[in-house]
Each structure stands twice: as structure tokens, then as C-alpha cells.
Length: 588
Image (tube, rainbow, N blue to C red):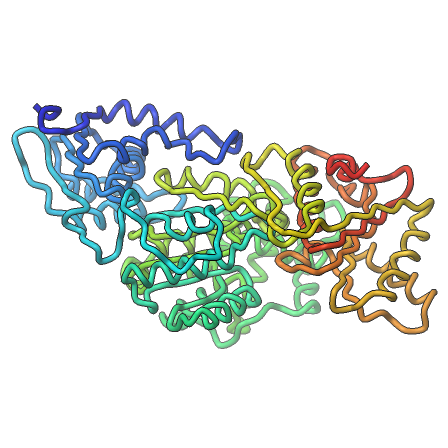
């Protein structure tokens, strides 16, 4: 009967089996395709779908129902008939499990939101009917199979246009170096405004203050006003301030105060062995508790199961006690405390979720666990989320960023739409080609095209010297002869930069105004000419880690260094110790 009425019929248990196979995909990706593509295509091919035999016993069942069926049907404008012996609203209310990752009923609340947008379920002879698109109209959304609007994108390439004009819901844009990611983000904002979203309902977020300043300036240049642009810390500050959850002061403890805490903890743990804890290591331990484990100091003490964990937990506990005595929040607290508040307080959560209908995130590959939670909570329950990033430029593993987070976003949002920008408009052709050869040696990445978009050929020069001192002397001479506005010298570590500075001081009477920076510090920037110094084995890749994951991290870092250069790239190395990355890039 359903088929005669034009419905494509699905069995829920079969979708559950397919969904489980999608979830074990992991980072082994041979293409950019969403693992759930086979399921999602059903909603492009069929306007009416009937889902039979739905049974939801736990939160995982609800996640499958929502992520692989309800949300895609909603985004594609399909009529979805659900055959079940229960009412979805009542079932969602009875399942009290918290989503373990989100620590509140993330899936249940999103289901309730979709039900509110459609008609109320009503009993008919066979199933329960909900017509999603017809009752939702054009207020906030556009189905993914609808004809695109026509934004002013005459100067954009086809891949950029496709990303800007993507449907609503979760959209992931993979944006390699120099591919125009900020332009795409700005044009996406303009597209959302054209679709009827008020500017004040759009939130753009990025990791640091410099990136948010650039986005604001680009929006102003594009004639866009009223869009909210904040860093993650700025967003956390706004939430805590509005909800009256700040302390008197914001800032971290000084080195002397932190050293005192470290010494006290080590003294109390007199049986502990190993080297003393530095202030940098202590701050990292504390940040890991706040931004990765996301637990309180009392919980950390309870969970500590060996002497090392007990020492770390005690350090965290005393640090937190000191902050409370000083009536102080540190910068990690701005994100960690705002996430905790949103998770635990339903009223506060809904207030901030209702404040924004659209959320755009720049440099998504750089975010850490707490920031990913902040993004996901604020984007819910509408799930209109536009993420821009590049897994090949994920270089902040030490700051809890992981390449898996961007590759496996489709495990969090099975119905996401993914677009890849393909052309590097920054670098000369030979630089783009060499960097592409290099990064393709990584296994944990999307297999995607990386094409030259610039007209200039560019130039790469590799120079090997008998000693590193000779290389440093040459580097010093090159930067003293160069235009300081157009060149940078990059190195893997600060110690390598000191070698060039020392050589510069020996050869010249005054310091060069040319910028010297670590590769990490150069992320997101560009110069006409880039000199990479110290491209030796043991330096890049760094000798501290030689396992496959560490080598891939180091390869991404060298890829970032190479792609900072617009037209000339010079690489200085030591003869007989040249980095393997030069061979992999086809430069040796």
C-alpha cells in the first residue's frame, strides 16, 4: 500500500546495521565521501520515505533515528513516515540517558526541535506521519536539493561557490593552504543573510583574537554589519559575564606563584621520583584537566590511581584552591566553565542556543575538546553549522587539537555535507606541487586534489652546507640583504632561530629587522619569500618522536612552512643530514 502511494520503504533495523558500519570508518579515508552517503542518497532520490519497525530502547537508537533519518529527511525536504508503537515525544522523555560525550540530552533535545518544526505526529492506519519541509517553510532553512540562490560570487571558482551555496545543516569545508577559506566564510555569511537570517542571529567563531579581527574587517569590507564575531575565549567570557558567573579578576598565576605550588606538591609527595615539574609542564597538566578531561579538581583526585596521577591531581587541586582564594579565573576557565554551565543548566543552555540560528567556525582543525563542545552545544538544536578547516594543517597536537576531530566530524553529524576547496592561489606552481607531493605521504588525511591556482611558477632553492654553522651564516646573510617586509625565516624550534641570531650578531653590527619565527607561530600567515632553516633529520622531523603519528605531525608542520611562501622558497639543510621531507617533496 505504501509503495502504491509513492513511498520508498525502509526497515529501521537495516538502517541501524548500515549506521554501525559507518561509525567504524575512522580516519582510514580513501576519499572525501561521507561514510553515510549511501543512506543520504535515499533522501535525494525519494520525496516520500516510510520507515518501518522503529524501536528505540536507548540513546544510541535515538542517535541513529535522528542522525541518519530524521535530520537528513528534514534537510532534503522529504516527507518521512515513521511506523512505531510509541509517540516520539514521549519516548524521548522516557529515555533519560545523557549523551556521554555532551553530558546532557543532546540528541533528545534536537529530536524535540525537529518535531516542533514539523506537524504534530498523528495516527493514520499504518504509520505516524510528519511532513518536515512543508510545515517548516523558508524561515530558517533551505532543502539541500533546492535550486541554489545566486550570490555575488563571479570571482569564485566552482568549488568555492558550491561551498557557499551548500544546503543548511552541518556543512564542512576542507580548505587547503591558500584556497580562499576566509573568502568562502564571508560569502557564506552573505548567503545566509540572503536566505533571511538576521545578522544578529549569525555567530562567527575562531581560535584567536587576530583571526576574529580579520573576519570582522573582511565583513565590514563586504558591507556586512551586525554579525557577532568572537574567539572561543571571547564567547566563554560573554556567557559567564551575562550569567553572572565571573570572578573578580581574569588571568593566570605568575611563575613565582606556580613554582610555589609545584614545590609544595613535590615536597608532600617525597616518594615521587623523576625530574622536577617545570612551570610549562604544570600549566599543560592543568589545561589537560580543564580542556580535555573536563573534570573538577575534586574529581581528578578521586580518579587518580597511581603516584603520577595523584601528584598531577594534587597540583591541579592546589592550583584551583589558589585561584579561588585570589577570586580569579584563568583563561582556560572561560571556555571550560562556560561549557560546564551550558551542560548543567537547561535554562541557560536554551537561552544561548536561541540567541544564534547560524554558527560558522574558522580553522576547525585547531580546536580542542572543550571548544568542540562549545561549538556543538551552541549550534544545537538547529545544527546549522558551517565548519572551515584543513586536516593537513593540524599542527597543534600539543594543545589538544587532533587531526581525527576534523576527519571524523561525520561521525558526530552523519548527515553533514562536505565540500573541498582544491586550488592554492597563494603559492607559485612549483611550491604547490612540491607541498602536495610531501603531504600525500600522510595516511591520516582525506585523499583530495591539491591544484595550483596561482599564475606564477615560483621558485624553490635547496642549499646544503657542510655544517649547520655554515648554513646559519648563509641564512644571516640572506636576511640582511632582503626586504624585511617581504621575507621571513622559519625554523622548527626556537633554538634553531637562536643559531641564526648568533650568526647574524657575529657577521653584522646590527640586528636584521627581518622576522624570525617558529613554524607554529607562522600558521595562518604568508610572505613573498620564505627561508626554512635547519631542514635536517632530528630537527624536522624533530628527534623527540619517531613513531608514525609523530612523523605525520611533523610532516604537516613542514607542509605548513612550505605553503607560507608565495613565490620563493629557500630551504637550508646540512649535507648528509637532509630531512626526509625534502626527498618526499621531490626536492632531493
